[in-house]
Length: 144
Figure 1: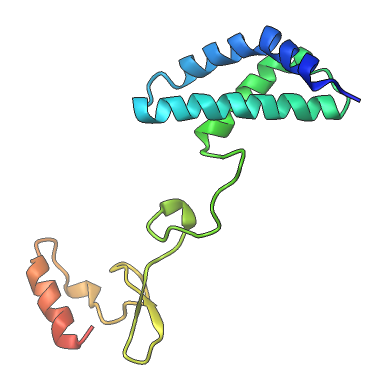
Figure 2: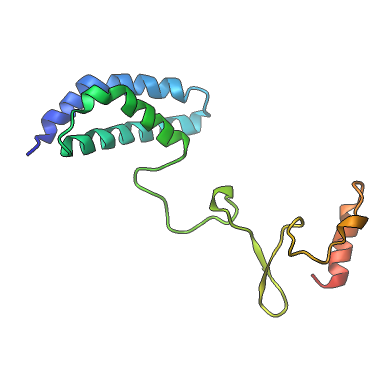
């Protein structure tokens, strides 16, 4: 059985300072509001990786550079150790969702102008200098 107090001290002695310096260097260009969270998330991911390797009987000290690299990538790709909330944000591009409007029958249809489901737009007659107010007026006259 592992003595986690000893392993935590070993982590602090071997990996903490090096990971913290790598995190500061990796996220130095980030906005200051996000930088502290990114560094904290990276340190948490580093300890998570370290403890999982110990549970499998591996020596994480030998893989320190690789663990730091993967912790940086983990944060850059916006992953979270604790996970995310179950609800999706429809305005977030990562959710890959389109906002939907309901027609008069209650059926959803896409709201993006460029969607092929918008068959009422005659794209051959569209000019680049079209007035958005005229588009809104045409949409209102069609009852959309």
